[in-house]
Amino acid sequence: MSKKKNKKSVANKNAVKSDKTSHKNAKNKTEKTSKKVYKDDFLGKDIDLSQTPFEVYQDVRNSNLPVLREAYELKNHKDIVDQEDSKIEDIISQEVDEAELEEFLNTVKKEKEEFEGVVNKTIIDEKLKHPIYSHAKPARTGLMGTIADVFESDILWYSVTFSLVLGLIFFFFNGLQPLLLANYLTQSKLQAQSLESDYSSKVSSYFTTQNNLVQRFDTYNPTLLCNQQELYINFEEDLNQAERTKNSYFPNNDLISNPSYNNFFLDEVDTEYLVVTDAYKSNLQKYQDNSQDLISTVNYLEFRNTILNICKALSEQPRNLQEITLKCSEFALSLSELESMGTPVFYPDIEESIESIQASCLAPNELNPSLFYLTVDAVMFYRPSFDAVNAELIELNNDFESKYNTFMLEMDRIYDDKISLFGLWYIMKYDLS
Figure (cartoon, one colour):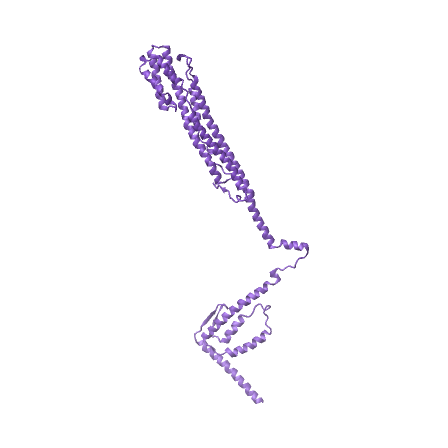
């Protein structure tokens, strides 16, 4: 028995020696051949494909030992690994083709990726359950605990945030902006009142000047002779007043546009105000044009003195042709100046009588005093009427007042609409200039 046992032992030694020799020869043979390197992205290093499959296996296994052993503890790890290594060494210790080895490693790599994708997720999920990560707190009890839970509730704070945002929006649309609107509309109405007051004061001066000039026509007294009549002596005073009246009909630039309130404004308010200012400007232009006729009326009153002077000369010295000729020349010069500066609108009413006086002055020696006095009376008794002009101007005033009143009512309507529930959602514009 002992001999058989020894022989068997010797045989095993020879087999081991033969395996070592074959491994050594394979190694020498591989070193002589050109080395082929495989780059493993997962391991992060290069693998020499000249290694035996078992050596490659050991490198892979040693570099991929589990890290989190507390989650996946392997029992009797060392004994199991030794047993498996001996089995694997017997299976893959033989030489393998390099292409087959590379395909094998690629398969191992793919399986490792799939495995670790599942394992890592499981490990992370289990780790996150640890109290250090979850911050789990013991359940509260009692009234104070319930109150504390309520204050730490996300729903509570979401509700508070939503309420704050909603309150801010409601405050802007129902509090701040209506206040801005009220002040803006009040300011707009005050601006319109100033515009209306300025318009009224300007147009009233026209009628004052007009009435004053109309009264100047009443100075001729039909019961007195020509040499007893008073001449018109208020030319400078009346002319200055008429010119001041005409120059007053320029729009006030401070009232033309509706100012914003702290740079806030509404287009619809400015549009309504523009209607009033357009009437304001156009009406003042019409008054300015008519004021020029007042100036022409003053010039006409001054021109009438030359007619009265001829009458005086004729009544005082009926046969003094030299004096009558002098006064007629003054009359002709004054008439030429009146026509060059512009005759008043009523001039056609007395134009025929004035032409008759002019014709008489061309032949003073043939002048018939009785007929001449009648012609002078026709001119001097004439009192112009401004009724047609005044009716047109009053219509303009009424139109302006109507637009002004409409604007004031529109301001109230806009405010009522904007503070209503459905009209509340508007945004006033802001002037950046």
